[in-house]
Image 1 (cartoon, rainbow, N blue to C red):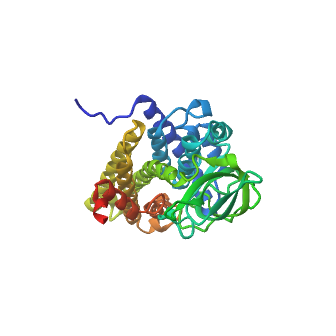
Image 2 (cartoon, rainbow, N blue to C red):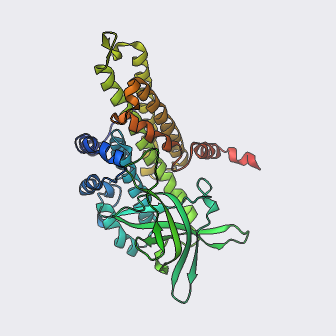
Image 3 (cartoon, rainbow, N blue to C red):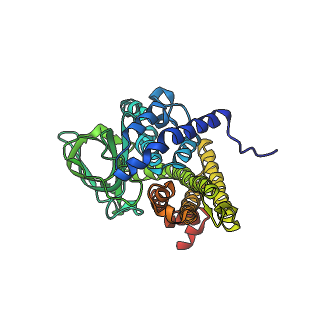
Length: 391
């Protein structure tokens, strides 16, 4: 018996379609959006018409009936050209719509998923707070149930939330403390807060190092009232639910990071063939050849890692460790490849008109978002059984 890592025909067709879209539609326009720090509504609308926001969801909810492998392939191809567009899709699907699909009631699914799957609406995931990022258990946002009105009353602040303040943002799923366990630890629940709810405010976009054509904001909740029925999943299970969502999201982020790493190879190859120094293309120099060979090796290995994790997820097998491995490796090699690509481009690599400058700025956040590299190492060690040694 032999292993076959080739894509099924339908997956390969999807990959090629998005590869063409990324190069023909995204690449010519995204640089201007990036420099203006402007959200690319036109490109996002086109992605919605292609069905990309509905890829891993059933057709009955307006989705494409695909899987997480399909989503990863799309994210990789988009990130080969631009990460702002890729993270908009990743957050919209993995963090915005997926919690509703995984944990929502039938009514919640039918209310929100068709518009989220079409790209007509974006969803966001309100987990991180000023005092609680990697330590999500340090949540300070609270939600109390007003028995008189049957409404949740939410107070608190969230930060670094992607897709949270665009003109098409429709909801933010917020984690909040809704009670205390017998040992005093907080019970965290997840609650859907529609955009425009009184007391729910999105601050102006952050001034960021990278991902400048994506939307990231701080959110505040001041006596925000939503119906009791907006509880997502079981009360007190919000933290456990979102650990599952983050595991899946790490597969998607790994695919995105792999795409950035491969994009660095693509740009370096093209530059090394055309840039001449000392009478010949710089690609004729073995030092440059070896750099690019190492970059390709890293991207190829990262691709195997995220596809392995995605395959396990799709087949219902345990994938927590493999997701952490893939996210850790791909994010770190994305940073390395971006640095090497910038070096190959020399002074031009420091100019924003060249895609590698954008990739260099976009790479670092991949070692931080959806679980830092340190958290991934903790998870891997725990999955190897080393957490037992803490006692």
